[in-house]
Image (cartoon, rainbow, N blue to C red; front, side, top):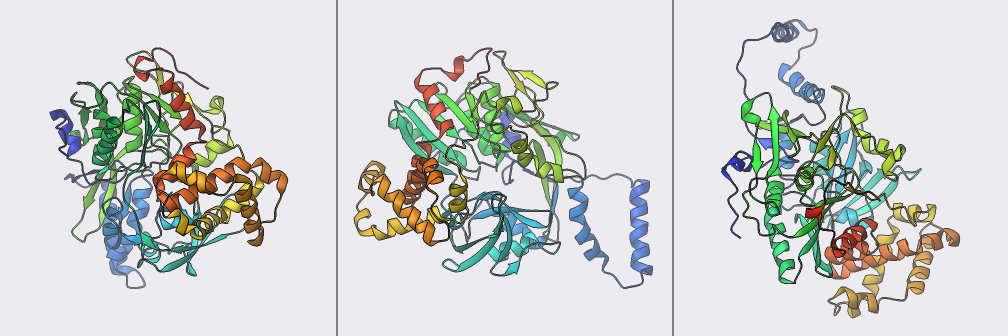
Length: 543
């Protein structure tokens, strides 16, 4: 596919390829006289080298402390040792064999940030937010744990098994999962299908090197099927290459519309992206779905659509990552990612949520805090900074200082979540049972090619549920029919979704889950009723 040339003003951003989570690659080298404090540090190191009671390797001492120095600046500045750089840079670039999670080391523990859709970890029930405390008996907690050691523990030859022990907030005891390593799918557009009445759905799970190409092809495929309205699902998308989000937004914006800009202390780190008007979907109606995990490049796209009055944002407040990092690689193959700018949406708002220098704990716990004060369930519980109010061209009020606030709020769906459901979900029994069903009827299901056909040949709902309840009881979760009936629709939908994934693939799985998703339902209803997001003026709808 031939990529369009966006206006010259976009070039500084387009040259920023190769950055993870909306990060720019570049060199940030400042030559200036040493300050008194810098001179003192040089003197202290010299004294340590010459007079400390034990002989020390000053280079090793600095290497060990550089991460702490950078981490004290802000939540996203970081030091990457040479042993980890290749692994870190490859996360969005190539296929590999492993368990299929992205992680971050937080407070000396391995926090699962994302579970790759369709990957081995997802198939057994590992969830974002889980803390991996051991793998094949190797402890993965404490100050000695490093990204390098975790990479080498989790990745491995396809077909080999790793036993993970994880801690989950909803479980009193650690959970164990047997994960069989497999090739990790790196596609970023996970699902594309026609929903109904000319409405199409596209889910973008990350912003990798090929995301714009995948996205444009998905738009074209849907357009050929008569789709004129689009639901673009960015829920759970933690970001990636920022230029890909810019190219995507350009498809929907008329010429001369601001997409994003960044401001820093050094002019070289300041960039501006403006649409060129050559997009192929300038008249298409769109809605964008977000949640509390939607971050970075995802927020750039959502902010550009919202601030230009081009479409509605539906769901929950996004994560709030609006800092730009330069990556500087050193001669020893280590690297530093230093925050050098903030990016701003077209209305002029910074969506970076607050943080305190040198105190990342509250920043890391922000999502949990949102749950605790009710933001996920009630729009009135959202703590908006009323001092940071901005207006779109149509006069709608939008807020800065902490993520993208949706035009239409849809609370976290808790229907059917009972103690029984939590127990079977925590043990990964839904996935295991679904795989067993698919395996049992494999000969018959091999001829099934469509989702409607699959739904017809599956056992009746009552039979499917009764068989699952017996399976769960045999695996340590006794039947509690009051709660089972409360969770009936949720259990059946999840079981069918996992069977669909095993038989037809991830796209079919997502379709089944979307069928009962209140955020997707709301988006489709608005598009079908003809409430064109382009014509929304002066009102900010809420439900």
